[in-house]
Length: 251
Ligand code: PGA
Image (cartoon, rainbow, N blue to C red):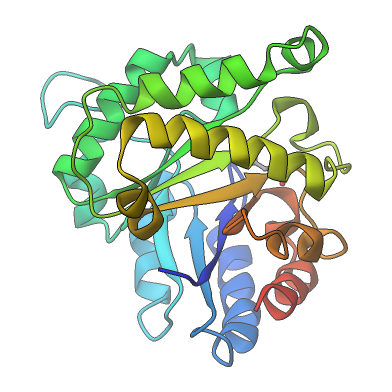
């Protein structure tokens, strides 16, 4: 449970050719380090099965960027947890800020997705974070506490769960926040979790990640923080050289 996590969010990007090149490069760095680091790739739905096959000889793991909560039925365009498991996924992002912003996702919807994912053996990575306005008006802590509390409403048992703190206003900006500031939010999240679960349960089963403009130059500052268990990387994880460098540094 104490390997550093490097979760790579490719969003709505990358063709299979480009993914194949990334995998070759990442795997070269990762093979030497996989006892200290856990790398997870999150391609788009349509690439999941192919990426799963490309990773057959690799220890890199696979996740999806979202899921719907129903098992099956008349939900055109939606993908169920069981379908993700069938495609070879172990992980799923839930409540990413881009889902909240562009697709109207609420904490209540995230909560349904958490329940459905856990019921099918997927490990959720719940994304939380404040907007710039919320940071400016001093409601950052209240916002992320509420996102966590509502996402985990009624969730009593789980093997493993990750929470990614991503200040919305630095995602894709090329300028992250200071690692010490990220660490403060991790403390807020830890207190929130301690209201919900026993301390040793959290220690064994929950990991906290930082996300938002992580790159090869700043990654060490985040993973060196004792309260940060890994990072969620978007843009920089789609560049072969940067991904290689981050794997080398992280481990
Ligand atoms: P970024 O994206 O690393 O490009 O800021 C992070 C994310 O969206 O999760």
